[in-house]
Length: 96
Image (cartoon, rainbow, N blue to C red; front, side, top):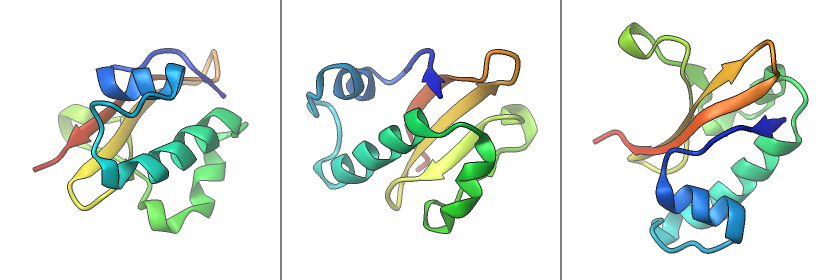
């Protein structure tokens, strides 16, 4: 699946150039796996096969945003464009 844009500067640089500067060292391996999975998946239903990532949609003012657990405090979040079958506004957020 195409990733249209990445909001987090460090994550964007890691995705495009492989440079992990700006990311927590403890999250790099898992982020690498998550980005590869998101890029390679064909359908959002494939995320259901990954219970360890605690995949779910947010509610309230973030309704429609998907979230994946990276570490205790950090989450990978994104929106999904159904018409283009693309991930957009991919972000790396500290929930605490």
